[in-house]
Amino acid sequence: MKDMKKYSFLFLALVFSAFVAAQKPVIVFEKNNHDFGKIQEEGGKATYEFVFTNKGNAPMVVTRVQASCGCTTPEWTKEPIAPGKKGSIIVTYNPLGRPGAFTKSISVYSNSTEEQVTLIIRGEVIPKSTAQSTDSRLPVAINDLRLSTKNIQFNNIEKGKTLQRTIDIQNSGSNPIRPSIVNLPAHITAFFAPEVLKPKDEGKITLTFNTAKTNLWGPTNNTAYLVINGQRKLSDEFSINFFSNIIEDFGKLTPDQRRKSPIVETATRTLSFGDIKAGGKKNAKWRISNKGLSSLEVRRIVNNNKEIKVSQSNITVHSGKSAFISFDLDTKNLPEGEYRKPITIQTNDPDNSILIVVLNWKVVS
Image 1 (cartoon, rainbow, N blue to C red):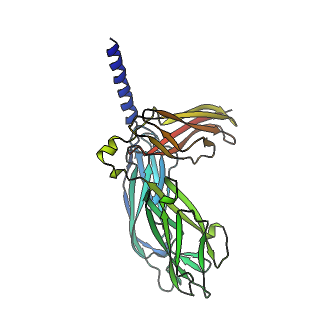
Image 2 (image 1 turned 45 degrees about the vertical axis):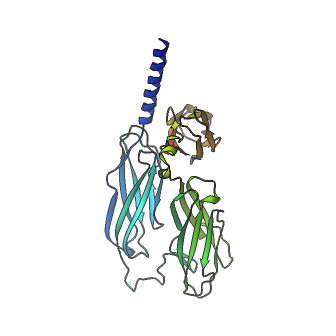
Image 3 (image 1 turned 60 degrees about the horizontal axis):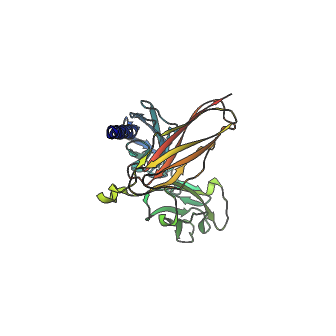
């Protein structure tokens, strides 16, 4: 009889685990590519809205959208999307200074069963007439220094590797320019060739991202500043922005390594603070367990919510053990109403490298 009770308990535990694992959002786009056709270079920016539906059975959060170049700007639905509801990715392409055919990719990252989806835009930019053309093919101007872009997309970089990107530059003025960059993080270096640009000369900035020199995982966003002839101005006008996503290539795991991998287990992907009075504070803890054979690493917790604080970020959960992640909510300056905010958690579980925990609460009088 005891054995029957034991096996019944194990069966129910397995059923419950399967039920929890089945609670996944599914992102489905109405279309994954769009052709703008022919657009005029001087006609302004071209915009298209990619619409998607969450066809899963759990809330979905779009964690990040990354374009393949700085000429393409994405905006997206930031709030959690309930099952059956729609969201969108609005993509804007700037044709200025980019005559000719183009094809650009946009990577959409979410907590869906398909963690990354690629969208494509294409078209052909009809150039300005000669009378309208500027002195430079480079669209970005910082004083007399012109650049091909101020936004550097390193995209996905495997941990332990380096990746390079280049910016085209030109001196459009009548005096020599010696450019440099300050406030670069330790894992990004810049090389200028030539070091001094004579009037009307062109050159390049080679930027190298070395993942071995940072402890970060997942999406990163760094800002540095151009210095022209030694004159430092740490303002948006002189800013250079770097975007990347530091990843682990789980596809390289051998069958034995995958069998021994950590396995995330959670009872829920939502955490409720319940009702809380305006201006009040509250704490809640979320449990994460490891049913795999090797240690589970919580490598990074991405929290973009100023009203929420996370007490810890780097956590190791040994095989068969559990840990708690603590969240502190401060409703100061929050109006009455219901709130749902996502937290992104990155782990070394090959099948759950990105987890989305949705925190919800209601501010009452």
